[in-house]
Length: 360
Image (cartoon, rainbow, N blue to C red):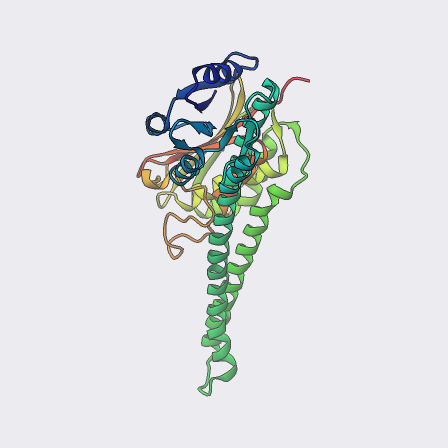
């Protein structure tokens, strides 16, 4: 349920607005009231989850635009809809210019209209927040991308210069080392580009959703990572006879591969165990990947799904920092959630909650 703060000094007006938003179907708002600027700020300080604010312009001894400006400065995350009297359209326009999401005129709106205005104000503010987060993420993404792609290029440049312009004789053994170094750097760039492709795929994917047996995901993961599993001397086990699930075989296969690859990367040397199960819950299927690896410190659990977040230096653990971020993208593409529970030194458990489709 959403919370609406109504700021108005007139009891009758507050009563009308409270009735519209808390009793008229659908009653999906909890309405709290303030009679002046002081009580308004007290409400905002005491209640941290206010979704929208309906602000009356005309309150005794108070300039509504001045209060609006103060509210926007201190609580820019809360959408504000201005309530004005007849003939105050210019004030309403000024309010919009200052940053109010919308305005309504007292006595000139229906119940449906004002509810729609408030709903749209909340949706618009959420879009603004998402856009701001995406822009910030894009800036960070670009900065890190430039750094991570230039690093192997710089690593290639040195050996090439030695091979082409060095006046000192270069032995066959040295040539092999230089070519090996170049090859490793090229492979690092190739991994980065492939990871970027997979990271962007869920947003542009038109993959078909279907009901399928998760053994297809298990086979896909085992085929892709068989060499890595053997090299790590890790025991990878899958649930027998799992329940069928709904989703994209290709994308969920990539998600499972990334989770298992992550567990392999952060295993406790020299061996490890990884187990994958599917739980058929009432409202969702849960794909659970459990390992007995090194675990994750609590301070890192909140941002491990962010792009380019590496828990350890790239020198110790090779990776692009996009594996878990891609898992989050795939989860969002399925309207699913993915969480990690972990304790440092005691392994990790990743759980994808895949919602069941509505019965047709």
